[in-house]
Image (cartoon, rainbow, N blue to C red; front, side):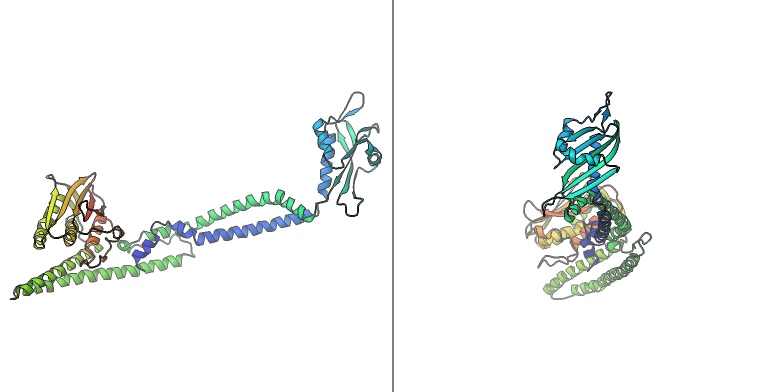
Length: 477
C-alpha cells in the first residue's frame, strides 16, 4: 500500500476514534469486567456475612414497634400514663397481621394499654416476668402453616418512667430466595452499581490518559505525506511498550524517504537527459525530404517533448527547488501563455480567447509555476474542445483571490471523475494524455494556498477554475 493510500485510509478519522475501536475499548471493557467481578465477590461475601444475622431482623422490627408505642408516653399529674398515640399510629398498628400489645406501668403494676382486650391474659404474664427481654416465636398450629407467632416482651424507659411492653404479631419467616432478592435490591445493588459506574469511568479516564501520547503520535503520523517524509515521530512521551512500534514506523519512513528521493532524482535526470536526443532528433527531421513523414514525426516529438517537460515540472515540484515568490500580474501571465499557444490552437483548427480587464491583477507567486499551471489548463482544454470552437481564458478578481477560469466546448467531465481527475497519471480512456497536466496544476495551487475545481461550462464542456490568494502566504513544505 502506498503512502497516499495509507493517508487516505485515515482521512477524517481522529486518532482517538481509531484507538477506541481496539486497544482503548478492550482495556476499558476488561477493567470494567474485572471491577464488576470483584465488586460482585464483595457483594456475595457481604450477603454471606449477614446471612447468620437474618433472624435478628424480626427482633429489630418488633423493638422498633415498641419504641413507637412508648416514645411519646408521659405521666399525668394524677399518676396515670398517657401514651399519646394518634389515630394514624393506631390505624397503622391495626394493619399488622395478628397484632397484640400490652403496656404495663412498672411503678403501679397497672395495665396502661392493651389491644385487643382479649390478649391481656396471654400477654400479662410476659409483662410481669422477671427477664428484662423475652423474644419468642411459635409455629402455627396447622402442619403446613407458614405463619409463626412472634412475641417480644421488653422493659423500656420513657418520659413516663419505666414501662414493660409486650408486642405480638403473626409473621412469615423469609425464604432464602426472597431474602437474597430483598437484600440484593435494597442493600447490595445500591452500593455496587454506583461504585461500578465510578470505577469504570475512572478506568476509562486512566486508560485514555495513558494512551494519549499514542494518540498524539498517531495524529503526527497522519500528517506526514509525500512532501514531509523527512519528518520522524517523537518517542519522548511514548509508553515503553509502544516505543518499538514507533521506532519501526520511523525506520519505515526513512526507507520511504530514501526511495522517494531516488525516484525524484531518477525522474529529473531521465527527463533532463531526454532533452538532448529529442533536440538532435528534431534537427535531423528538419533535413528530411519526405515532408509529410517529417510533419508526422514532429507531432510525435512535440507530444514526447510535452511529456518530458511535465516530468521535469513534477520533479521540480516534488523537490520544492526553484520556487520563488515575486509580484506577478496574472493578466500578463495569462496573456503570455495564450500568445504562445495560439499558433498551436490555430494549427489544429481551434482558437483561444482571453477575457480580462485592463488593470493588472497582481499576486505573490512563483512565475514559472503560475505560467505552467495556466499552460497545462489551456493545453488540456485544446485537446478536448471541439474543432472550430474557442477555448476561453478568463482572469478576474473574486474577493481576496485571483481567479483564472479556462472553459472549453468538449464533452465535459463526469461528476464521478471530478475528484480523481487531478491525481497523477489518471487519464480518461482514449484521451491520449499522460495524466500529469492537471496533477501539476493541483500541486501548484496547493503550494500557493489556492484551489482548483472543475464544473460544467454553461455552453457545454468543462470549466476549470484556478483560485490563488492575492495575500502572500507561506509555500507549503
